[in-house]
Length: 237
Length: 237
Image 1 (cartoon, rainbow over the protein chains, first blue to last red):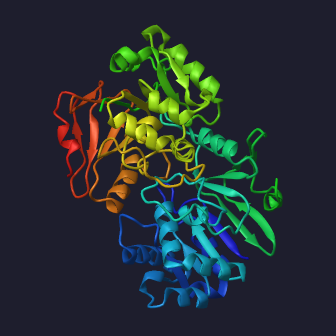
Image 2: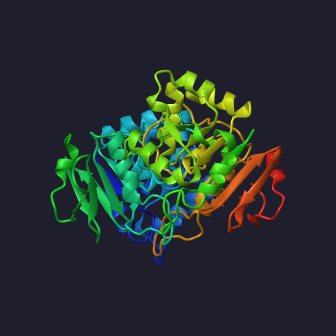
Image 3: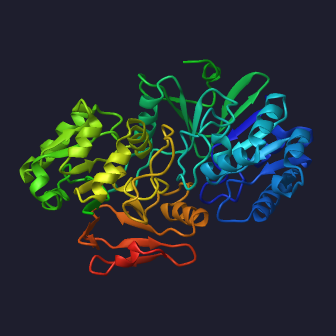
């Protein structure tokens, strides 16, 4: 497998996909001019607008995508895809549409066969076993929470330490601790904005200017730096 | 029906259930000394500890609860309950346990027959048609998103305007706007911390020091004040 899992498209002050753009192009390699894009996480914009936005952002890097919704035969489009990219938005809506259209199994098969995969935010979340560590609102009910399962750990994208002042709701860390109680055998990687993970040649690496926060039931959460070996994440805890 | 739906148990600087305590006692009336409490939303504390915490907080108001988990026959306990109270925590876990134990239907029936209901945070969320406007992480997968449906609108508890600075994730309002696109026929009430809603004698009222933020697909979000008539929320938009 060849995976690029990105926490977020852009942080405030950055243009869309500005930070990960060069890495996306490098990761896609020869396939970068012919990518099948899944825009299903986009809710408040049309799929066409989403594709236009992604192409505008990635054109300087020579990346060109086509929306899965524009193919007459979406399953065939996935079967023949040279690369697959899933953008951010609402994870529940994304998963539900992938399930109902049947492309989820086709994507899983193709990526496991070696087709390069790029996902950010919701697109990084669905690369995990389930969507149970999403931050999104459950605006629609998917057929199940089971996702693509490319990696054996869960990613929490947009991981943040800050909490709005004077607010009584749970912090992100409290939410993840609840996840651990309910799912004691699964690791969670809190992937901060600006961070991404590569998997290729059987190796996993963390890239970006931030550490990631690692959670496992029974252990104190700890930080891992981009320079550290994170391949233990590929094994069962 | 007699409902008291509370945004949150306590804001920073307040003791647990300090603000809504007196309203809870008044709402429960003669039943306040004999309340069946559903602690299923509690994940990082035991159900016993949850019950102890609630009783300690509400004892000054003469309110006494017993956890549903301590009854040999939970369905019978609900059938005979004089009042039902559901506390906050993780909404997905709460709904899943209510579904799997079968008490969800029993609670719905009893409350619709007039037994007073009190719920805060997750407990206010499950009084709505679905849990689709929760802020919680989907740490477990419920059998469905369908909830108690005591009111025809959705509550977003802990509604907040603030957004952590420099963070690229969606604001609360953006999340609710996504919900509206996917569910154009349902109103959402953003219930700020410190706010609550009463329903009794066929009338709905908003209580607390804040306005609530009202969302409906196609309309600009707007504020409603506690002094305003909010009974239109009981009708279809």
